Length: 354
View 1 (cartoon, helix red, strand yellow):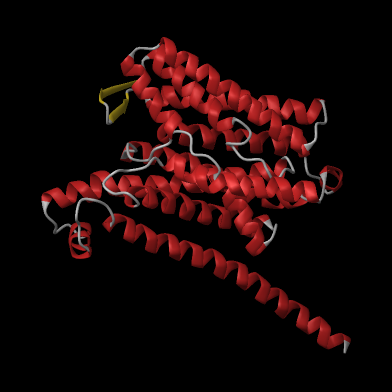
View 2 (cartoon, rainbow, N blue to C red):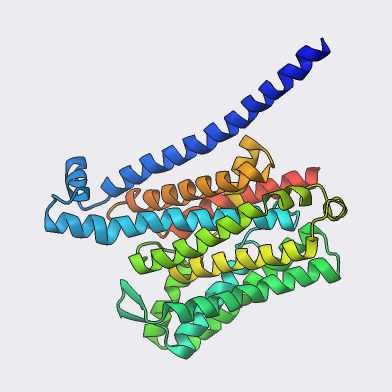
């Protein structure tokens, strides 16, 4: 009997692992199919045949411009931004041991937007040629200032966690307060800026994927790719942290170092994404919680799963915003906030019930 149990355990564990892998693969497949639909969806009147011919280099010139210059950068940027924000939220929730933590709820995204506003107004890093066209003259300067703004929020949260031993709920409240502070300062900067600079700043406070270019996508892909590699290399450390700080230290994990580097990488991801596509809220909160429900807390699978669901959520939100009242395009930040706010309230109420 004992031998049968010992033989059954590995097989049941393998089935459990295979189920997680299949969920991740199914999410990736769904994202790919949605991306194919998103290329065809919109007010331009493209047919599936036109899209296929354009993708293989045989379409008309106007179709080539629509597909390769407008829709492909937008779709790929939505997927990449979703991956980055979701995995940043996943890791932030783990290292702070707070289910409500994410770049948006901790004020990191708002800090990044404030930094971008400073670069635009004081250093002329952004301009606009017409109301529908925002140009980043110096993307590296915007990213640097956005990162500095996001790190300001990160440092305050880490200081509260380390020096004052505040509760997880208090950390989120501190993040909300910091987000409001950064948003208020950004509005004050807009008040004293001229019309051109105000038009440039509104893009970052709005959250929109329509102006992302191939250059922006390349920079986001590099940063998100590096962060994913780093997070996966530390997956066992995050698993140890889920058992508590003292347990993790007992297992040899350098808790403070892992927490500092994890917040640093999460802030960098949020800063880069925010500086190109604006504030997109709640993706980093919703995505990890959906996957925790489906595959559990093991970061070996939770990190890639959160990446996959983040890409799916943001791509679906952007596609919905482009098609729901076409030809009017709704900003993706409004769609994700509409989706994420009820989830935030649910997680908050669930935590207090416990």
